Image (cartoon, rainbow, N blue to C red):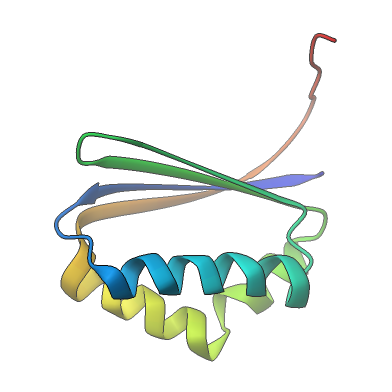
Length: 97
């Protein structure tokens, strides 16, 4: 894993379409665009999602996917009050066993 995309949002309204589309987008990112790992956390009205990638080119291609663009627009209009996205290169990673 060389890159992580950090998505942070202040939730406005979550509906059934959000739940379905979020699951579809996760599957598509992992299977069609080579996302390695995806984690999402929610506390009250705050959401943080982390997606891990090997190549910046895959992140850029995912960003332009037609369904993903629709989900982004829907998020801006209906689901989120605010959001931010950070694309970071991982310099070092370690964990305890």
